[in-house]
Amino acid sequence: MTTPRIVVIGGSAGGVEPLLAITRTLPEDFPAPVCVVVHIPPHAESLLPSLISRGKRMPATAGRDGEPVQPGHIYVAPPDSHMLVRHGRIRLSKGPSENGLRPAIDPLFRSVADGYGPGAIGLVLSGSLDDGTAGLHAIKAAGGTAIVQEPEEALYPSMPRSALDNVAIDHVASYSDIAGLLSRLIEHPIAAWPADSEERQEIAMETDVAENGEDQDPTAAALGSSSGFACPDCHGVLWEIKDGELMRFRCRVGHAYLPESLAAAQSARLEEALWVAMRSLRESAALARRLSERAKARGIHTMIDVYRRRAEEANERASLIEGVLKKGTLAADSEQASRA
Image (cartoon, rainbow, N blue to C red; front, side, top):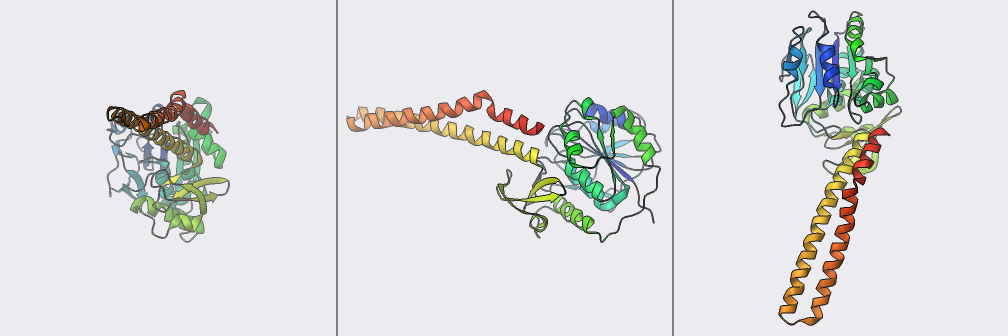
């Protein structure tokens, strides 16, 4: 018994140019569906389907919930929805973000690992941080094929490098060679993988969370142990999950992070908190000055200096925080984390 084939492609910053080159070079009669996730802001309009279709080979459309995937067609994840493939059909989900993103690459890759097993081919292109790594790991665990763009040519090499560091990659290729590689790989029939394998059951559990939202089991607790870290999105406990050497995190609600994305999210949340703290201290200083002036007007001399000192202390603390923010220390730390 053989399993159907599917190709899934994930990219982010610097990934559009190689994606267009690959999809426009694939033959019209490519014998498998191709599903694409590129990180885009939630309220932006995706122009990718029309850009890809200008190549006049394989047609490309935004994925529509419930439509069957067909060979020779490219499906692009729309803004603000995870795109999954379940039982041969597109599923769009407003499920929890992964790596701070929706659409994210990992849910799509994980869903085809569950549904297609060894028939899945996953490709990670240029991008920052590490989305796509856990998804490629799932595809490999299911017996599928993992490909990354050559990091040296990627405008943003973090995503392909993260995959190389954590997954047994089958092929590292220049984007100009990937279409031909996909055409060669797709020709080989693949045996189906057993539905009751432990790896498939675990992958299916996490795919259910991406599709349906809050984890009721909870999956994270079933697969890992408490990390002691809080989820940047909902502030719940993050559970640490280890897939071989790959470390990742998931909370009970279903938000998921890889280490680099978690570090970046923590830095962003810390910066937000520091801006709030600075504003609160400036407001506290302004209130103290107003109270000092009021005490002076009312002749309450014992309180004038008390309020004045309170204003000075609040301003000093606010200035310290402002200095940290203006130096860009947090942004530098986030960038270093993305290169770790």
